[in-house]
Length: 498
Image 1 (tube, helix red, strand yellow):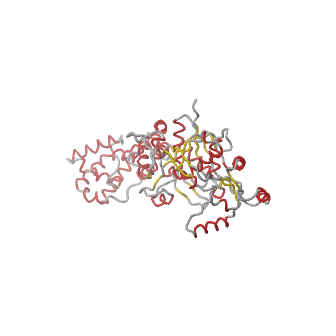
Image 2: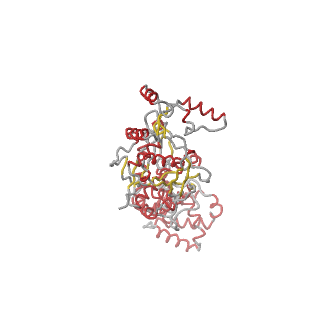
Image 3: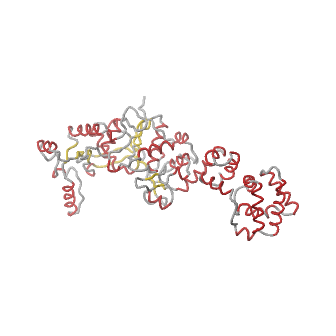
């Protein structure tokens, strides 16, 4: 029997979940579901200086809203608890000790001032300083100090870090599922810190240990982690876990709308679009807009994100989450970055909005209106808007008589024929018992026929008289919704003021 596919989404609670992180979560979810596996949620919160209260709950709520269900992890539980790295310190210390005992890691007692001085010396000689196989022999660590000196420093409480002892001449190669083979020489990698002086692990040690202990089979993460991947491969080797190492897949960057550079929160602020799934208020009280609150439907956002870096190889663009699961494969993810085109996100929103029933939209968004009237309003506007709240705005505007009129239409269409036709129509309406679109249109046609005026000659003028605007949705249905008395009043006002 083949091994169960297990993936993880491992964000840091340092603020709101960026939309690039949401895409990473989505791709992990799609692969797990496609292959009958499990998705874990792990919170990587070992950097306590960057921890932001409320960020973890924000991450969980974002995934729940989008329907990205977690099988195991924070908020769900499971056999590998705890799933917060800040609660797993003893596990990391134990594994750091394994590397120390095996001679694969060492204690380093250099102060930041000493390292700065070494860095300055190298820079003055025109080169960059790296703590590596060449320089570690000249620095203050357990490779240059005696056992007694090391023991004395630790017992005296002198601060130290634990560094990986990177081999001097070793080829590191691994196959990335998106980028194919990656080759790096160990001489380009410095002796990374594995345990910090505060006793907490760095990302590198914690994520490798956790992925191994949690039986992760595929690590799907952003391209920004690709430079760290060779180091992680070295850690798997150092622990003797190379044969069970997960497969890596590094996702392409999300680019600015114009395509030059990585998408940032600043780009969103300038462009007036969201890059967070939900609205976020930071500890200083500053709000950032979210896709949900802006009126994006979760199905539209999922579909939009799926296509940012992946394509199904067909012409199909609209996919349900279930259809995406069936179609998804890592092989069809692009290597190059994907432009964040917010107009495409809006297009998706329009498609999904139109797929919803009039009744469902009315019951969700037009609760202040009678249900029959609400359904008619939705029917009138849902093909003409991008966001559900625009239907609400249009609905509210329906019941406010115009205070200004489209002057271009007035200049070209408000003539004697129009006035005669609108007057006759207005005077016929009180006798109309069943004020519905078909009957309204029939009444208008009958009056125009008597006058010998074609409907096309007066429709725009009639629309302006009723709404103030020269264009809009079905005028007959619109008048039905507004109601007979209000329509008569508006026609009367237009005839007396224009």
